[in-house]
Amino acid sequence: MTSRKKLPIGIQTFAKIREEGCYYVDKTPQILRLIEDGSHYFLSRPRRFGKSLLLDTIAELFEGRRALFEGLHAEPRWDWSRTFPVIRISFSDGVLHSLAALQQRIRLLLADNYERLGLEQPQGQDLPGLFAKLLQLACARGGQRVVVLVDEYDKPILDNITEPEVARQMRDGLRDLYSVLKGQDAYIKFALLTGVSKFSKVSLFSGLNNLRDITVSADYSAICGYTDEDVDQVFAPELPGLDRDEIRRWYNGYNWTGTSVYNPFDLLLLFQEREFRPYWFETGTPTFLVDLLMQRDTFTPELGQWVTMDSLLSTFDVDEISSEALLFQSGYLTIGSQFKMGARTEYTLKYPNQEVEASLNGALLQALTARSTETARQSGRLYRLLQANDFAGLRALFTAFFASIPNDWYRSNRIANYEGYYASVFYSHFAALGLDIRLEDVTNKGRIDMAVLFNGQVYLFEFKVVEDMPQGKALQQIRDRGYAEKYRARGETIHLVGVEFSREQRSVVGFEVETLLS
Image (cartoon, rainbow, N blue to C red; front, side):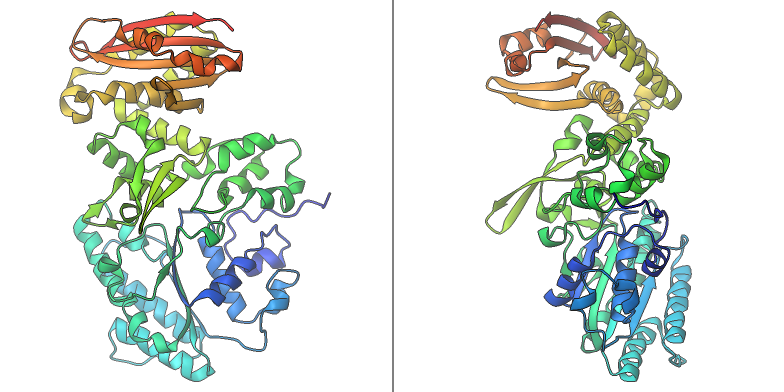
């Protein structure tokens, strides 16, 4: 086995990774293909997924720093006799809260590029003029067309997404900058813009029709992130002492219609800390996302199995925020499967892994109940009660939980008044524990609301909402439709659980259990 190397935690510069002998997953095969296939690209990936490192690697390649690529795929395949001027623009640092601040930042970024390329900055130019002149002068000086790399192209907009008027100003200011790329195409060798969201071409890239979106291209699904093969080969020295299947269950599963990948941020911290934790989720609570899902009365059990069209996944603008697009682009859902329908594609979205499903449902549960401290305490009790098959305790837990929510909260929160609310709270409690949950699992006689596979046993749940008193229909439906038959071949004890929620009492009024021994 090869010796352990330094973990490149927080390092986004290719040169530092190579010079300090850190682990590096070779992305140059995809980079070379990208350069050979075209010239103008757009890539959307979630935060902390390696976009900045990708851009820096491309920059070093075009600038001809051969020594950094020794032993990599690109070294014998790249023409090192030619170098190209590289313009780098990054909005990753800091938060901008006004159009004036954005314009000042752009001016500084352009000035930095003029200085780095040894060019004299013209006076009296507006920002689009300064950018256009930069492209022209850089091309003229070196005799080669220019490489343009834009990192976090959308961050000034996303940082202000809760203030639509400011976000619109940011969008319009950035559109003025990016529109230069179309008019100066003759001077550009290669361009790549990366970010988290994909704003529509109409709103941000008006007229830039040659910008190819590779976000859901199978060929580039693994251009950021680590594949299973990468983990087993590059990081082999880090694996002893860690459960390989658990690593896969916790952090793998992101997919953009090709090879599935792991979140690199999670893996590097796992290898450092040697403990399974939601490292990526903990770096940024998706408050805006959770609030939006609550405002839209989202039925949380459906989140991991949403079906949507390709056009909706790429429909994102300040004035039209699609829940599916927001969840997908920010990394809380990923592509599970796709179905071609002529010129259109239908995608089924899913949670990428246990980290995201458990952590997001924990955040959603707090929003559903407005009781963060109590929710955390309940989750621990739920796990122990399930482990002990204490169904009387489970009923008491949920009855007490719903009863503890103040009436004022029900009156002031619209989501508490729709039928899916109770099942959402119930499901999110289980999902937040990271249990193996199958939602609306199909049998030959219908769909089970929720199946939980835990501790070598199977729990089949059916939920019903009644007006006031229990009617016993939930458990009866599980019996009548033979939902348990699908699971008998597992040879495990099966528990049938019928749960009834009362609109009038706002609580659990029916909780019937029947156990089928293996």
